[in-house]
Length: 202
Image (cartoon, rainbow, N blue to C red; front, side, top):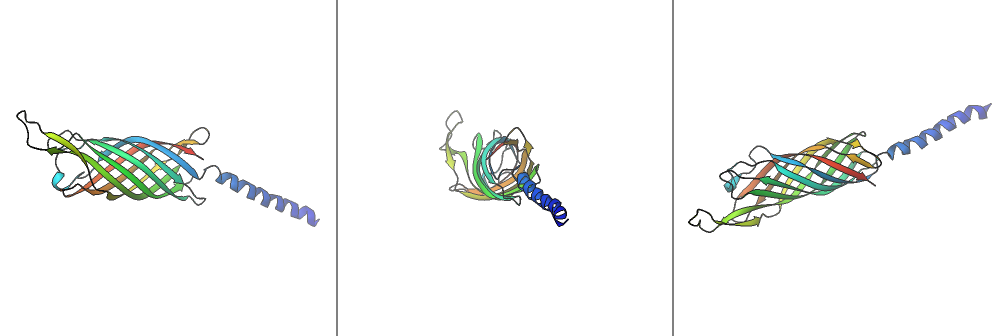
């Protein structure tokens, strides 16, 4: 009699332990994420002596490595670049190129959503007018790179499973970066980026 009573409970415990790890394996811990989209300047995109002139939206791309723990939290590290067009009066050059390295933490919410926040380290490239304008009104321009700046980024998005270990990861992020060019004041830049990622899990 005792054996017949214990066996079903024992089988239930074994089945529970067997199913839970299988569910955890549905979201592999290591993910490589390739992203592409657009970045939109917000607020006063740039401040200081370099302000003036409208900034247009920028093509954006990036590559990130994300590690997800069993509790849903995990670190990420990555690289991204935004190329902001600037063709209006007051712009010293045709574009601003922001090259960024980011590190932070990501929280996975169930199987289909994520939150992310971290620090940005980046440099900005842009053209400076060099010399006196010639008779035609033009002047030579030189591209310069700013000092390494510090900023932050936060965002949210979705995870849309595809076949195998691949998934789409659309997301929206808000970022800001403070940087400085030589012989120029502090520049504070703000933007919102919206992009689509292709995540490959290992």
